[in-house]
Structures are given as structure tokens and as C-alpha cells.
Image 1: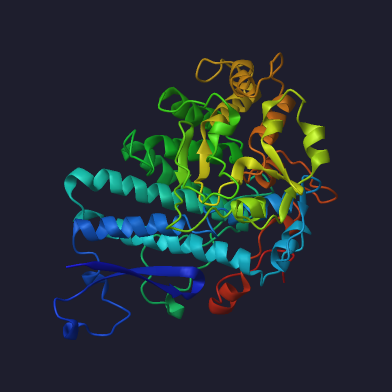
Image 2: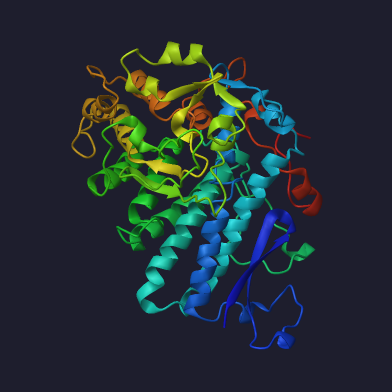
Length: 461
């Protein structure tokens, strides 16, 4: 019998995955929008379908489909993005004046917790999975939950290095499926530290049990790469370098010869957009096809010629001030009335979440910070920095911390790193202090209205 996945939205943005079975005769179908928990996930196939649902929610436009990365870039923007968009709520981000009723922010919260609840359903039924698949499915589910908690807590909570993470509030931690909401199970916000620890726990287990290769689904290196990013955000440089080194030393990924080859193929003007597949340096990417949505970064960073709105053009002055004339990356911008990044000039290109180049830069930065200790991975910061710069056609003679951080800015530009790098390096954003309240997402007002245990972030009352 065919299984149909139904997702019901519950308030506090926690969603229950419901699997129902169709019957042989149409007259046997009883109208229903709920099903008892003990009847929902009965077989290994049911759980596998639920896991695919979790991936689908992870890749929604308002989560890893791209929107949170854009909002973060706009919050960090001072002179790089020429924002001309008509979405007032994204203009709030560019103006550093988010409101607690901002729909884009609310949808990030909603879709993050939607994916978490999908995973909780999978993990609750993990014993139903065939033995040969159990470890992999457990690992994929924990990768998703760990990655989501990491991004939710660093968006809706203060930076890990801002005050005391053991008392600063992050997001609620819910580890069991939510089927019915009553006042008895209203959730409160956990601390920032607790959110990070939950993410570490999930990602560590995911890395332990996931296979090295797993198609375009999460792998052992996907989990290690996310851990490298998380530990870097915490300032745990030894752990970050070790995790990045595990990705690099797996030798399953390699930098493309040219920078432009690291991203989805730019579509030909006037021709239908074709799906862009993963490249050899994609450690984890969100899969996009012309049948399953679109690249949410293309929506705003792409010009109309390439299927986007053209709302987030790139300042020519910023490009000229930051890229050397012989830097091949300077050629990966295009003129379509305004200047745009070619990274997202494909409406159906995959959204790259973790690239190998980031791992080299994490290892380089951490090893530089850990000097005079011997470099983790046996490669000096200069050698790792040179890997990235050589691909861009540049020579490398020095690997100071400033050099490495600048290289991150150039290599990872407009991929959602600006805001989080500013916070962890305590770099002010224009006239705003790096830890200003305005740079933290507000808890959506609709969630507070629904759950009396949630409290608002400072600056949004």
C-alpha cells in the first residue's frame, strides 16, 4: 500500500510527521488529519520515508535552502551589498532593525523546528529500521538535528563568546516527537551552551556511525565539517582544526581547478535553467531540481536574467577594494545592469552548505591561533592558506591571522558567513558593536503568543 507523508503545523513551530496508508477501495478511506503515534511508523520503510521528509524540511527555502544565510549577510552588510529589494522585512535586516513580527525570521524558526520534529519521529522509531540500515539512518537523523540546533542557537541566541553561554538563552531543546500541545508541555528556551552541547552530541554520534560515502546524503565528513564550523564558532580551535582535518584527510574531496567550477554551472541566458549537481569539493549540499523548489540564494543574489529578483547586487567598490586584479575570483561577478555574484546564477543550482575550501581555512586559522604548537594535520597555516589562494591564481608568502580571516571573507563571500565571523572575531558592523542586540534574531512573536514559557530577546520587547 502507498504511504503518504502529511505534515501538520503545530504552534511553537514543532511539527508532527504523520504517515497514513491508502486502502484498496476508495470507499474505505476515512477522512482524517491525525493518526495515533503507535500506528505512524511501523516498518523500516516508514522510517526511511520519514527521514526523507526531514531532509525535505531541512532544505526548505527558509532554512538550508538559503534564506537564513541571506538574512545574516544583510544584518552584517555595511558596504558589500547594494540592497534594492521591496520586501520590507528583508529591508529590516539590511537596516539592522528586525521586528519580532518579521515573517522571514519567523519562518526560519518554524522550519528549523519542523525538521527537528521530523528527526525526533525517526529516532523514536529507529528500532523499526532494518539492522543493515539502522546506523546510517540514525546518523543522518542526528546530523540533521545537530546542524539545525547549531544554526538556530547562533541565530536566535547571543554569540557563544558574548557573556556567559551557560546563562544566555538560546532555543528550546526538544528531543521527543510532539504530537499534542498542551500547557503541560510548553517548552522554555534552553541556554546557548546547552544548545551547542546538543548539537555537538548529535553531530559527534553522526560522525561515528555515518558511512564515508552516502550519495548526496549526509556522510561522516558532513558531520565532521559541521563540527569544525561549530567548534570554530565556540573558539575551541584544537577541536575545530581536528574536525576540519578529518574532512581533508579523508581524501574524498578535492578543490576544483577553477573557482567557478566549485559552484553550480551558470545557466546560459535565454536557456532553461538546468539542475546543478554537487562538485568534488561539496562536503554537503542541499539538492535542488527544477521539480523540487529553487535555490533561495539565487532568488535575491541572482539577476532577472538568471531567474532571480536582482535585489542583492554587489558593490563594485567593495569588489575593487577587496580583490586583487589578478585574483581569479574577481571574474566570478557579472554585469546585468548591476553587478551580481555568479555563485547563484542558476535558479536550480544546489545550495552548497559545506565546501572543502572552508575546511582548509578553518584548519589554517586554528593552527595559526594555536602556535607554537605543532600544526594539527601536519600542514602549516601557510600551506593550507596557499591551497585556497593558489586555486585563485595568487601567491602566498604570509599566513598571519589577518591574512587568513581576509581570505575567508574573499573565498566564502555571500555564502552566509559574514555575520557569524564578525561575532566570533568581535568585529563591529558599521557603528554597531559586534554583540549588539539588533544582530540577534528576535524570538517570533507568534511563538511567544502561543507559548507562555518563551521569553523575548533583549531589544525586542
